[in-house]
Image (cartoon, rainbow, N blue to C red; front, top):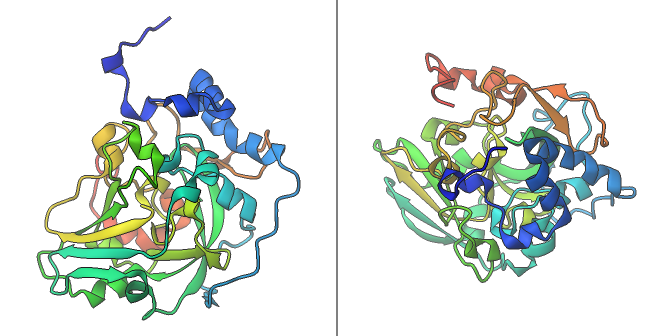
Length: 323
């Protein structure tokens, strides 16, 4: 038996006491990555017929250019009931149970760094000038589970252009709300809070990259990152920062939270790549949420199926080094 000393344990492997008391988190701790990849199947198998999505409350158009041919979006229950959002707990079902403490209205976002226009802007300042659209995207999590999700939002690049980034703006950094009263998981030393992520500015400006305000035609539920989250669909889920309160243009590559916590496991780029495994499990295949406990795994698609659109961003780069 291998007994690990406390200084051998990665931050990403820490299970807080509250999660330990939860049955699914206990199973994940006992059985490791194998159980973690099985949990989506168990979640789908336990429920009765998934609840239908409620009537839309957002005004938006459906963008037929962005869909997933021959695949059906996951149900409202799956999309909103199974999430990674450690600010509300480390178990996948914790956010849906615990995120009611988040006050998503009113909301403001600070714009900072290498841009001509800076300051604090309300949610309405950020969103109202833009036409919302629904895009159905593949979503792939680093733990090898996936969904198909009908997001509602608008191209992030359209927003960033409004702030007139200078020639020094090589990257865009995003920061999540820091408030343990609203986000009780931040009271635990799972990560170095607040959650921070970043993109190269050409990635942020890419037409696929969305600033998301809703899902299934409704305003974003708290557990999905209300009221504003990022969605770059060719990247693993941890890149898609939630509950954004700050956007900063920077000349230097930002630190990103999971890379700081476990740099050998989570790179800055986080492009979906079946050729680059996580140190503790393979990324060559994935399981779709909702497929049942014994659903067949399916091959992971390079860049999550968006290679035709985004591969050119990485021409000449060693994607095993820049993972």
